[in-house]
Image (cartoon, rainbow, N blue to C red):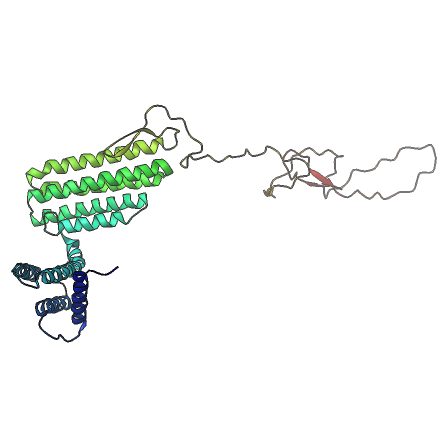
Length: 359
């Protein structure tokens, strides 16, 4: 199948223009205006981030070139196509610079909408629900900081309304997503962090409301009421995480509503804490078991009643031996009686057992 002649001509013109842009010396002045525009764009890119005056001059020049292109000419179609391509290239080149410049934009500034668009793009590239919730809360924190800066600059009431509305939007989205994750996966610590964050932001807004315009103070009060609801919601959900029924199945602007009524504990819940089992200490050890580590004091006197014969006093003189009188007339020769060795009594090693007597 053949290629239409008009398509081949446009493709040839495009290839020739691309060669000229890459540095091929021109043969005639067919693309003189386009090459001049490309050269100007390159000079702008090499010069760094353009300021407001430079951006206005570029915009005016492009608008003027487009107006000139509307004049009757045999190259009208080619000129408009080339200028459109150049405008797209300029937009892409300045898009990154504009997004970078918008990072410090405040509500009411011309670049604030670009800043919010960049935040939406960041959310679109985040796929984990918990990470999305954290980003929403991060953006809400940024709004509070921007409101503080508006207070120092004495901004208009409309700027306060914009900032507070965006704050509430990110707050609701972050709390809704985070509580959904907690009720599904558990996480008492996440609710505690959310409650602490809400209390901090409420304190920050309370410090700003005195310097804000009178017309915006009602919006400040509404935002603080919403933060109080967040703290109450985290408390109610935290008390139901160990129950079989955590939520009612319905939701409001802050997400799932906690269930009411009696809590039937779910032992399989990731937030259920099983108390450790403590075995009672044995009252006495069985015979033959290893002796405890406690050492009996050496200074105590053994008062246990021995089970064997009484031992004579240690170190004393034994009682005299009285010989039984016999009928023999010759008395027996005197004998020397050796006293028995003294008995050694060891206190019992285990309470309840008799002492150990050696001897």
